[in-house]
Length: 278
Ligand code: C2E
Ligand code: CA
Ligand code: CA
Ligand code: CA
Image (cartoon, rainbow, N blue to C red; front, side):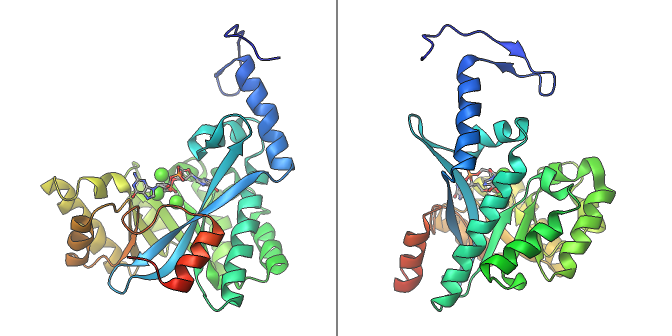
């Protein structure tokens, strides 16, 4: 059944990707994984770096492939888009995340959960209704949910996305602008869209302690966010030095390996119970 490097391929008109037999098999397996609920959702703490309290958690999807082991989102999200399954996948992640946050709330550990949203979801005018349904089914209060959007999600159809986001905002859900600073029109988005939270992209944080310019840029983003009344989160925080620099510049919410990698629900619960975070 397995092709011994004997690939054949053709161009998919939609994505101009060369499909090999391996990829076709992966596509079939991904469909099945989505259908059979084989995707896993990990949670990464977003920490108040002053108190070391877990302020929020971000949901990050994984696929445990029977033969290939854990696959990261970059290895299968584009495929899910290509085969038209990204909205189903997004709904699974949303449900799982809201259910997890509700469980923690019931156990006495209220925490807001942040869920990444794909462009396709944002362009679907039924998306707000889907969210309402998921919140209803899981019992999670709307104010405990944050949606993370990226610039690529929006640029093509600002007007439509803006409408959907306004509707989502009316539900009392917070919106975070992810990977801030990496795109071309981050500032336009800040002006046009109802954003509550800025996430400084990890590419700026990574070299914070080595590169003066990156420090200046991060400083400016923090200032911009504060002036607009937004919460600013730094992602990709890996070192104590980065924590110190960010705190010095009044950025208090940190996400990154320094505090915790993305972990399964049980490990997160353990962490919260025993306050094991550094
Ligand atoms: P993102 O939303 O920017 O998520 C942060 C990524 O940085 C995650 O990669 C996380 O594991 C990684 N990360 C966290 N802390 C550190 C750190 O200290 N250092 C470094 N180098 N990396 C860190 P991951 O889990 O591989 O996810 C990659 C991207 O895939 C995400 O980037 C997000 O855009 C997308 N994604 C993940 N889950 C979902 C999902 O459920 N739905 C959608 N639409 N996209 C998702
Ligand atoms: Ca994110
Ligand atoms: Ca990000
Ligand atoms: Ca990213």
